[in-house]
Length: 153
Image 1 (tube, rainbow, N blue to C red):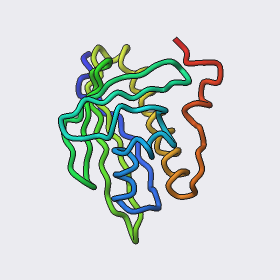
Image 2: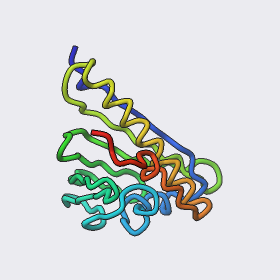
Image 3: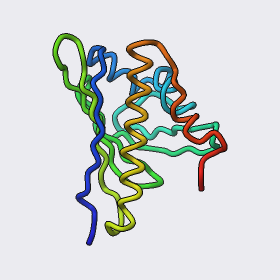
């Protein structure tokens, strides 16, 4: 069975405004506080960006397919051609529901399932890091500390 329609969704309520949460994902000076360590630039419509996780010696490029300020970001990864969408919704008085959806996993279900589970866990970790940084100014180093002996192959 093909898994092309399989969608992984991760979400987290962040007690900061939509513009603050949106900026955290398009501005690498902020994103490096909770996700990757190096970027070739800000996310901009149509732009190809490289993100690196220097502690693991890995990186990947993505292309920004759609960008609606303070509403939505849509990118496509280069090495594993999946699509990722960030959406931002105001909840209550000044909080934001940040939702990350990932789809387009190539292959059959048996091959896709481990990738999808890994993606969901990874994006939840990113959202937890975002929450700690934006709400409390704390760098949790979740991504780095997940694999203290280097990224598994």
